[in-house]
Length: 124
Image 1 (cartoon, helix red, strand yellow):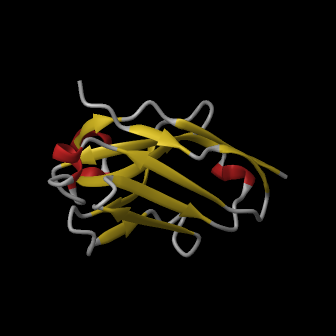
Image 2 (cartoon, one colour; image 1 turned 90 degrees about the horizontal axis):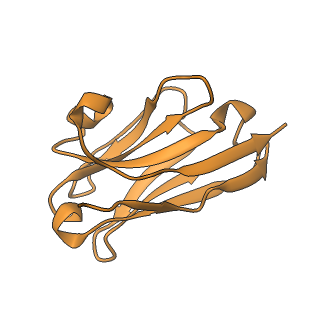
């Protein structure tokens, strides 16, 4: 059972910042693209960002471009999502994901491993 473990969620005011982390087993982190999805109450899970296993290539959803930044530290087997200028509509459970490529991680069908999620709540 592969465990991806998210942390860093919480309550923040609109305009504030948070950084999410995801710890993954080394054998996964060293060979998989990694990404973030989110699911707001009553809505479908949606793609947020992805990064290639070497870290050079990234993709961000249009809704978060310029505000969120995905990064990874391969030495620590840890994925990050830096979130700035947060809006109430960013409120969701954020899930860490691993897949074969950044392209495949653009949709849920391309995810091979999921974390259990961490809740981010942005108050207005």
